[in-house]
Image (cartoon, rainbow, N blue to C red; front, side):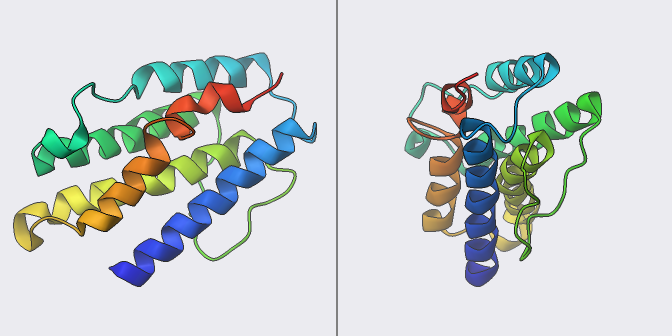
Length: 150
């Protein structure tokens, strides 16, 4: 999985950076609905207070998977299409769909890991830590609201 995961994470970061940069540079002005949705996403994806290393694998992966479920609901509610981040650069100017797609790529990886847990065992610890660092803690997606100046 290593190379595939590395590509997925690099693309997620590229799409995330595009959305945040376009917002901060004024190329994407969020609507009231987008602001509310980001508040709702933040409320629904608050991390567990227990350090993740103390959690069993299933619970640890479920924290990541929660993002995928929340983002699918957010995209449907807002009418945004989740796009696989893959090997293509993000469309510019980036907006809410790009941001949600970046975050979803990491949550979706958690779903793949959770599905494979029973048959393949736990994923690489280093990969899970990278996904967790993208989603949880200071400067991560968990701090999403702080990246916008509007």
